[in-house]
Image (cartoon, rainbow, N blue to C red):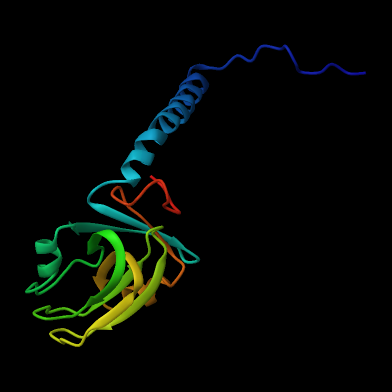
Length: 174
């Protein structure tokens, strides 16, 4: 039988040591940043969505009071494509929206208390006061630019994640 390489000492030149040290530093840095990335994933100002399409992140404003929900995205001439508004209700309930004084077309993603999207209303018409019914068991609503949900593949069954969701029952917890 021939010799096996176990127990032999590997010696590296100066360049080899530098490359090895750099790689080990990268690995250690990557491992140390995992908790930071996990914390970063659940922030007040962002919503994550996952589904068959993959994942998406939206920078959001949170509307979690009656006054904030009443105003929503009214009177705004534009919204960045990666932005939105997250409506959070204290209880799970029937929810309807309208587009009074809303100047941009919106997609409305209605989610249950588990953060699962139950209904998607695409391209709500600006300034239209016709009620848009989202369902009987709505806890969260995410408004994003009109047409974006379909373009990205966000659909019923996709899951949302946010810091202020009910973590004990959320499908995708922080």
